[in-house]
Image 1 (cartoon, helix red, strand yellow):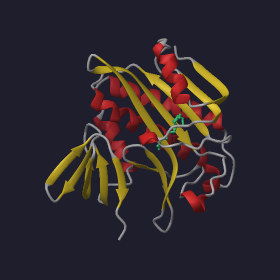
Image 2: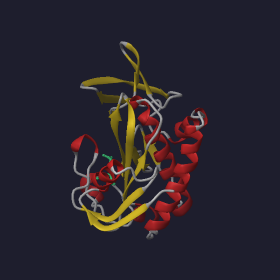
Image 3: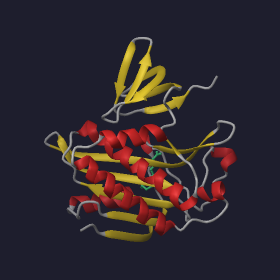
Image 4: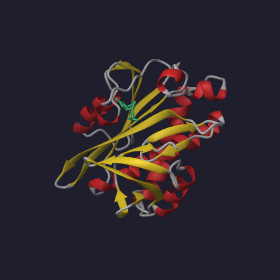
Length: 245
Ligand code: BTN
């Protein structure tokens, strides 16, 4: 049975959860906090986490190879987008692999949240994974400066943060069961419909190199298929930038 830990303030729910994972807390346990003083984004970036946002981390002990971790990011993203649609009526999209975004009427992309999936390895397999999710819910963003947006700004009202968390983890559980029973293809099919990137010209920083091309597809294993001048490349991780014309 999962445990749920709530804190008024932590440095990062990600760090707290890693500590708990070392103590082998139950699978899918969650740490959430009202405020993070040292929130972590991908690539060592700072994640600004004031009161009013949803900041949480969940631990998993999955039987999977390290490169399969992208599947966890994918199901977390779907769970978030579907929950936000249900509770706030907002249509968000997923920018592979980890960004939760809103596309405005003029085609502008605004980040509403992000997912940080970190794995700790043991004997080449994943010992545990910590999925961290941050969603700008009721916090004020200063959209003009950062390009980020909150759910409150998008739907014009406050959203109950605990309800959002509860629904996201319930949906995550359902998709995780599908994944664990070997049925990832139907999940990817859902992700494809929510994906912002298919058909777009992008550059991708992945494994120390920068690739340019057009996103062809999200593959059955959750990887990104990029059509480049040197042929198709299959990527399991990376940072995607959309090329503007
Ligand atoms: C990203 O888009 O770079 C990922 C951001 C992930 C932020 C969340 S907030 C909860 C958890 N704790 C952290 O310190 N980071 C993740």
